[in-house]
Length: 143
Image (cartoon, rainbow, N blue to C red; front, side, top):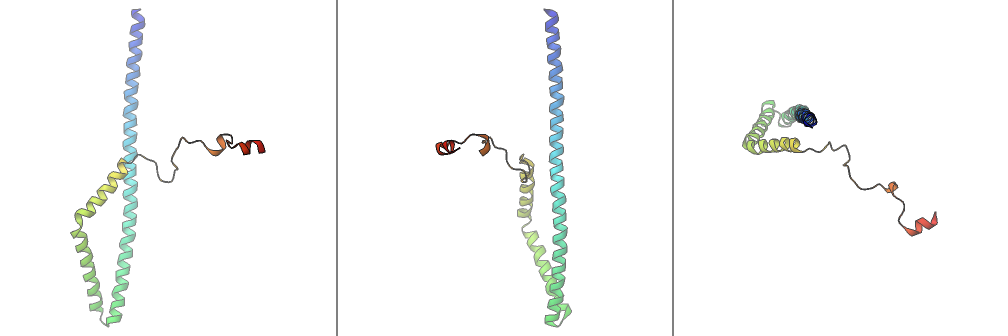
């Protein structure tokens, strides 16, 4: 009897130790997944930011040359573009807290959202149309 209880408690101890190890491993994997999500979103955002930067740069260069031709003065055309840049930077500085809050909310929403990507359809418990027989009496007698 004493031998059985010792063996029982040894098995319980071994199971609890294994459970703790598995929980720790699950926690690590969850942290790795969240870090991977953050890294992928930041990488994607950096790519978009770089493309937006070059798009803005070339649009403003084109605008500068257009205004230079239109006003017949290179200095005035590019000065207007410089004023537009200063206004753009001023707008970013003025709305700094709102921009930070938007970015922080997006990152926290991504981290707190445990759902899979939008590419995978949601899992439902509803039966499929072909999993159950027809319930319409007209369909049953017609077959």
